[in-house]
Image: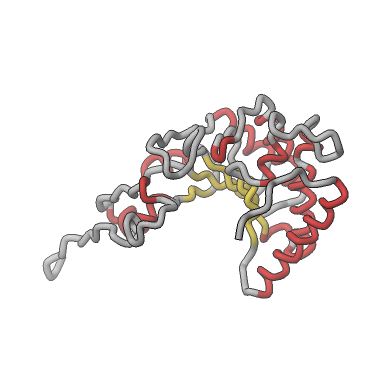
Length: 242
């Protein structure tokens, strides 16, 4: 089955799209989820609307102002609040991210801080920010780069959003602790390290070596390669009495 050719969604269709998200939120609750995270990062739908360079719409969801750029996401957030309550909802964001061929956005910071203020007013559970892999290209590319969110920007997010702030992307045990020590963020998320280290928590607790994930295998069809062929680490056995 071939995918249909993409087209711009019409203004009158957007309410139906929001209704589809609302149904997904209800289904998540029926399935026993503890909450929902709305994925507004990585060049997907909400990220496209929020990008002032990409969003050339001329309607009330267009790219002219942060209010119109974030309107779709906030409509969906409000639908989620009706189903779950605000404290069980999070939003994931990738400011300045270029994944999925996203263009540079000169208004990215303005949009981010406006959005964080609005999410704070709604008393959302958390904002989950990441600094982005691969300024351009796909997961299979050989070049992997990090776009680090500046300390100044993270401080501004902390001031704009009064809920929990999660920061993700490229952290080690030591850099994660340093980030937490600033007080600007509340939690550090780890993703890729868990691929090669299913026992990552134990490794951190005991200062055991951490294996590197095989990035060239991400999102490929090579079976276990890079996913279940990680090296097992056996901790040194302690002698009786120690």
